[in-house]
Image (cartoon, rainbow, N blue to C red; front, side):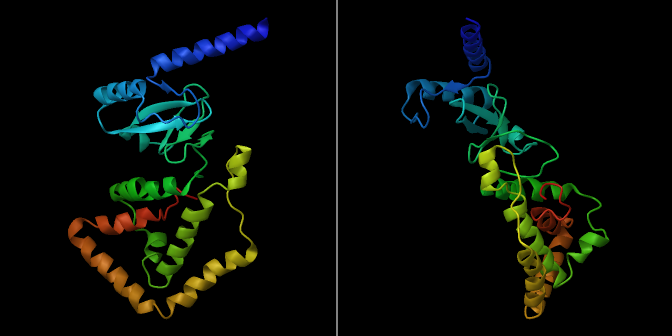
Length: 234
């Protein structure tokens, strides 16, 4: 009897959430809703209320669709939305459900990392006033710049993405690299830095020159894209 009451309460809570949060309930997983009249009516009502600048999220666990305003997607946790039923965050790009921690700079998929780099970290670095300290200026020296790009690219591609194994287990953990790989991350940039020294120098000089008339915005965006301060990525 008690179990039946709990099930009824759960269904009641879900119905209230669906009604109060403008959520569309799918009949089954992977349902094609392109020609579904109920979905189209719901979608039009969302656009009418919030405008076209919205994102569609899907919670596979709860089999629901929900929209989020774009200005909410560029706030932490980036490109994610809390499912009001299961209380887990959903990734906009891969629909992965996870528990969020503001101290954990690990992300579920490559698309999310790239979009954060292009549209969030790069853009937010434009607002930085004290960006050019001693540590950051080392990044703008030939060879050291190549080393920095290697290390930051590795962080974006691997250290900032949760391993597939940890995602299956429901708790984000970073990829583990062996000692040889770690050493090569430092050796290869120096090896490449010798023959490509002039090219790297020209690249940095060009970046600096085009930044002067634009309040150093191109240079700041360049540093923000790879997040040299590790504000957004590990």
